Image 1 (cartoon, rainbow, N blue to C red):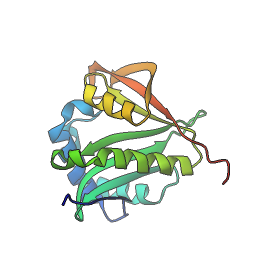
Image 2 (image 1 turned 60 degrees about the vertical axis):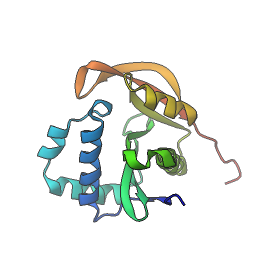
Image 3 (image 1 turned 90 degrees about the vertical axis):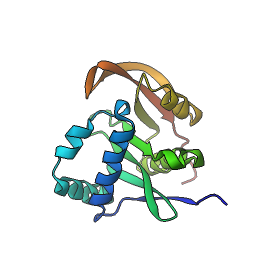
Image 4 (image 1 turned 45 degrees about the vertical axis):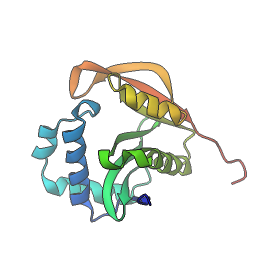
Length: 174
C-alpha cells in the first residue's frame, strides 16, 4: 500500500516547517530556485514565522504544504502580483525525492492553482530554470506552456529561466 498524500494551506504557527522544507529544497536542488542555501540559512528563523503567518491568511499569497502520513514533504507558494496586470504565480515548488513518484508535485500545483482561480485569476504563471528540463516537462504535463519570455535567474545571473503559463477553466455557473 502506498502512503497517502494530503495538501493543506500553511498555518500561522508553521514557520519552522517552512524553514525546514525551504532549506531541504535548496540543499537538494540548488539550481532550481532564485535563492541560495547560504542565503536561506542567514535568514532569522523569526522571519519564517512571519512569512507563515502572512501566507496563512492573505488573499494574495499563500503556501501549501504536502504531507505523507502526516509528515511534511513538499511545498509550493502561490501569489498574485501587486501590479497593474496582477499576474498569478506558483513558485518554489519542491517535493522530497522519496515521495516524488507519488505525484505530490502535481497535487501541490493543482491545489495552488485552484486557490488562485478562487481568487479570480484566469491564468497561472511559473518561472522555470531553463536547465531544469524535468521541471519544464512536468509543467507541460499540467497544461502549462512557454510564453516566450525569459530572464536571468535572480540567484545566478548567468543562468536563464523561462516563463510558462496555464489558462484556467473559468466556472461560469458560480
